[in-house]
Length: 222
Ligand code: ADE
Image 1 (cartoon, helix red, strand yellow):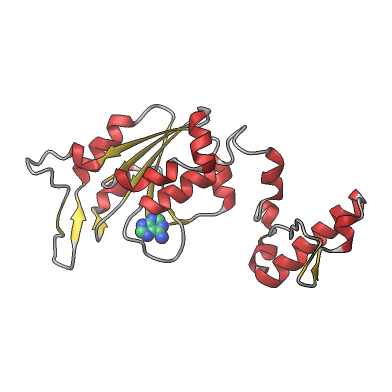
Image 2: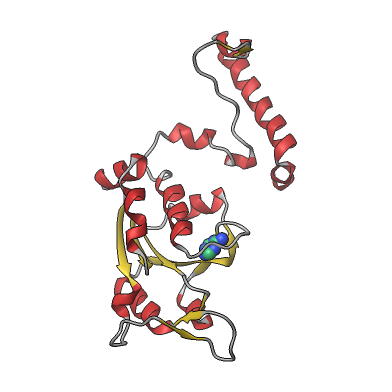
């Protein structure tokens, strides 16, 4: 998969790509990520990308031209263009699975107080990572890249996806490691039994109980 990120702050992504699973996925060519500074597409002599909004109101508004040109410079026939905005569709695990099947994603990070409404017509979809407002689309696009990259073939063990929270709208089951007894808190007996069928049943039951207690909305969707 190729991901092109259009942003005013490419430096924000540095650490994110240089550690752990993202780093490995890039090194093993499972994903290629390129950053493009929206400012490079400005036609203004001072590389201006925003201006006052018509009709008044606080804050600067991103102009459509630099975003349009940035998208067109990387767009391919197989591209899927996503705008990160709090007004987008709420992002869920199921959505990450769907995005993982595209060969080319273009992520457009909004910034400043807002962006010209016409920018919406250049993209295929708008995604929000939650009902809160961040200073820009950079962190949301990292969230999206991380959640999609880990689903790409060969990035992590396939079994891990099946066991993920939200797989089939259930939260993950509890896991334990050594020691068997930590300050009087013991690992459940069944996990030490070696009885695979009983372990499977116990885990499934734990998933149902945990989801019922913490996220009944997920069970309703199921
Ligand atoms: N930009 C600012 N806040 C956002 C959010 N919650 N989701 C996606 N993009 C955003």
